Every structure is written in C-alpha cells, then in structure tokens.
Length: 369
Image 1 (spheres, rainbow, N blue to C red):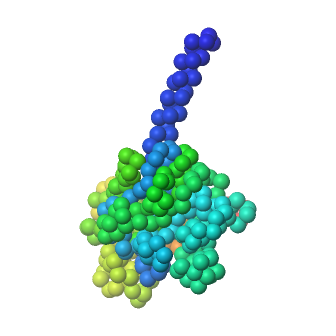
Image 2 (image 1 turned 60 degrees about the vertical axis):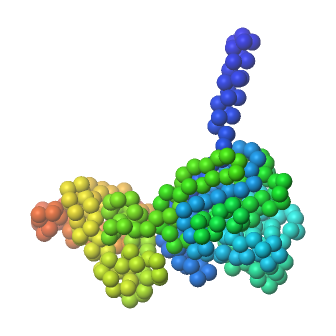
Image 3 (image 1 turned 45 degrees about the vertical axis):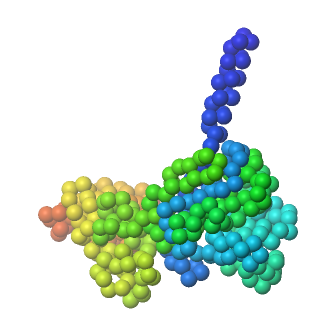
C-alpha cells in the first residue's frame, strides 16, 4: 500500500469511527412486561432499565418525556439541595466511590472490590435514612460492572429543572460547568419502576441529541392487548403470565387490564379468556392450551417446541403452558390433553394420542440421561 492509499484508509477509518461514536444513545436493556410487576415504595409498576451512552460532547441535562414522573418509585426531595427526582442510577462515580459528597453516597453505588457485584450504597450522611443505613432502594447492578463505565468527573442527580416531574423525569450535572460523559462511552445506567405500560418515549438532552426508545408512556386499549401494540399475541400471553396474582389476590391499582373477568384478580380464569376468546392466531381468534406457535392447532410442531425447550424454557412460545417457571412434564401433560386440537375439532383422536405418548416417553428418557 502506497503512502497516499494509507492516508485515505486512515482518514476513512477515522470518519467511520467518529460517525459510529457521534451522539448520545439511550437503550432499554430489559423487557418490562416479561419482568413482571415490582412492588416498591408504595408503587406497583414495571421495571425499566436504561443504558445511557455519550460521545463525550458537552451537555448538562438528560430528559425522558411523555409520562407522569411523580408516579415512579423512590421519588425523593434531597433535604440539602432541594432537588426532587428518582434516585436509582449507577455511573463511574458510583463505582469508584472515592468522594464523600452526600449526593454521591446517597444516590449512587459502591464497588464491592471484585469489579462485579455492586449495589446502591448506604446513606453515609443520613439524608434519606439514618446515617450508615442501607437505602431502601439498594439493589445489585446486574447489567454492567464498574469498569464498563466511561470517566465523568461530575456527579449527577435528578432534577425538575429540565423536565417537569408531571411530564417525565430528568437528570442534571449539578455543578454548573459540568458536562455529561466527559469521556465517550457508557455514562450511566438508570432504573425506573413505574405503573405505565411500555410505549414510545422521547428522550433528549441540551447537547442537541434526542431519540425514541421504550418507556412507561402507554395504557392498555383493547382487552388482552396488554402491551398496547394493536394485537393480542404471544407477548400478551407472556405479560399476563408475568402479572398473575392468583385467585382472590387483588390486583394493585393501575393494573386492572389483567382482570379480564372483572373479579378483582388475575388468575387462571383470566388466562382462559385470553387463550380461548382473545388471542389472535394465524387462522382466527382463540385457541387452546398447547398451541405454542399460535397457528390454531396443536400438533407435532408444538410438541417439537416443547421438546426443544424442555427443562429450560420459561415462556408460552417456548412450551410453558401453565405460567410456572419452566417447561416440564406438567406442560407436556397439558399439551397431551389437547393434542390434535383444531378450531373445528377440539377432541383429540386416538392416533394422535398414541403419537404423543411415544414422544413424551422420549422426552422423559432424554431428561434422565
């Protein structure tokens, strides 16, 4: 390669890398519906975990829009700084925990020395709970380790100065001259527990960057359409599974959409309605337990799905027919009960039952081996 070509390649590489790193991104790391309900600080809601990445450009504020931020768990007003907001977040200052600033110790996390598990810290200054006491929102950061975070010399906290609390949540570099992400990379991880269902959420910053991600901005529309995406499908089955309270155990306020029979709870009767009367298949509305691919019939395809995930699956589309923690012989029995089902012929034929018995025996032999 001659000198001119080498310069061109180097320039193109620089431009490509610069383009890839330009801007800020806010990414949802989890699935709030399949995580199920969290009950914290008097709030029952869905968990939203965000990773905020910056390119090192100057910016003081980050805002999430389109929902009532005051409904989030762990909303607090700092007694010294008078700032109100949601306090669950991790960043490099949390990981290092080298300073004694009360905001750092009360809103951040502490590295346990292994570089792996680290949790929201104790309140060393007694701002929210008695000094030295573990904060009520303390929890492990299982999404990133301390070394994943880029350097940022500022300490950040919630604010109501950029986004009004009734219109969302925002974060502020509290020392006026600071900038988010003074080194490009992961700046912080944010955890929000909020009763709002997942929907489109706008985020922006005063650095000139903005975008769209998923946030607690939606409400359920049609019965069974728990994720508000306009259809009733496997995601809604999994959502009901994750949020079932059990017979006679009341649903918390704001989660009435899961109570399809209007008796105050979310239980197997509500699942019956969802499966038999509401879920959409490739051939119509309604199916039977064991139709894991929602094609309106229960056959060897569904048996193959169950076999593939036997012992490891957790969701309907992996063969979990009864909303417990794994795919096992109980699910096989349920599938066997309805094997051969089609919309016009719900009673299994003897030949299909014999086929299922042989397949079930093979699964059990595989499990023992």
